[in-house]
Length: 219
Image (tube, rainbow, N blue to C red):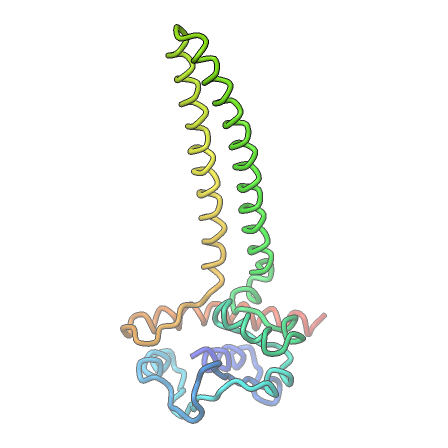
């Protein structure tokens, strides 16, 4: 669907195949297979004909020849960069390139920082907590009358660890949601309505991509 939508968007901006060459390929695709019937129907409703589309498997030569590679998901992007490391600089997810200010590597770095900071805080808290509990238990043995106060303080310290975890988990979920937002979900095997919503999402992204490419050419 993405190739058909991108061609259509470029055409609406006045560009044709003489101006820009668009080729789609799948990492695990088989060569020569027709487009999914649901995809054909959904795009036909948008005035886009992909009935003559044939699948193509991604090759290393195609990766090398391409000026820009747009992947549907971060996993696809990673596989392409693994195939040919020098292609990493020209490979983006659709949403990364369209939005410009999002980079999955930056988000992963941010997530890694949260995990590292969380581990450091947990280690520091554990050390302080263990030392304090030991001190309080010694005091408990010596001063039986202060037992209730000591146990209350121990429970308070233990509760801080639980609070810290909740804060870190909340931060991690926010960062992980950013990563999910960089993918375009594959509608394969799902109802026609899913193909339609995916088509609408890709169309919006492709409009942003084409505008960005045109603006960069003008510069």
